Length: 370
Image 1 (tube, rainbow, N blue to C red):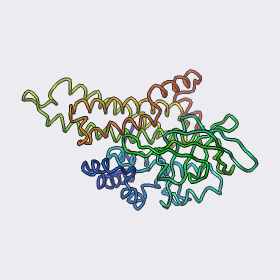
Image 2 (image 1 turned 180 degrees about the horizontal axis):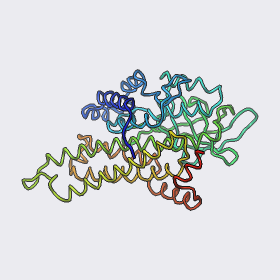
Image 3 (image 1 turned 180 degrees about the vertical axis):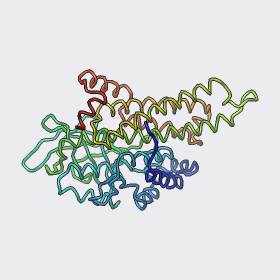
Image 4 (image 1 turned 120 degrees about the vertical axis):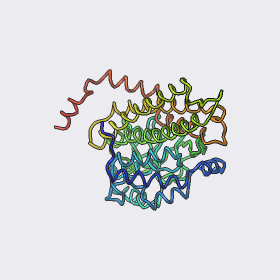
């Protein structure tokens, strides 16, 4: 595979690295973790000013109209810096509204591209709400757990089951009938449990049936991209540490067990990279990507767990010292893996797909493109 970025993509990557590095040095991360804040507000403002918040939003509603590969390089930089801003959910929600929503919803996407509102997405893999149609209204009941960024967002995309089909619905979070319990994940992100008690919306707030299949693999690619950046940075920090740390008058980097552990971590990282790039390529090429998204989600969960735990072990006592950012990388990796559904669930879903499908391979891809 060719992992070379284009000149424009490298420029985007360099800009993102510069923006995040200005706000996410070790001292700033420590101060932010102690502040109790759940979003880096100054950084989010800079993301809006530089257009990072609307990279994937279509040009027709004010965004840059770029593709998943361009967003991937931004998210890798975000993961490496542990920048707590709602980049991928915000612009994926706006893009889904544009591609699959009623015209009456377009102003939401326009204001999202302007940075005048914030959009979030509930975990679409969890049990959906129940939706019924009552005339021109859509009635939602049920509960959603751990929905990210609700306290800082105006709208959310949520999954609801209507006539035995899981659909996406645009919900105004200020509506009456939505009970909310706020909390904070261990890596500092705000989450909320939402209870819908016969919440009434317009039927036009419902996205088309194809929206779910469009959004699901892109959410996997986004979180896997952040994990790659996070793991790369964690390995870089670990290499620096084991090179400096001395025991028995030797650098611990010269110990065979340390070298083999680091080698295993690098192999795991590159495995995830090749899996992710295949998924992203297929998404940008308009190809089907259901099994590729399952395998990427599984590999991301495995890689995030393996690398961040091994890196923490190699740091010894410093790995669990909250005065060092090392522990934050583990917290972030666990949060991203939970968002992806975990290794076991994704492996089970992939196994079910393989058991019921016999269309995996490039000959089927070529037939699809004809």
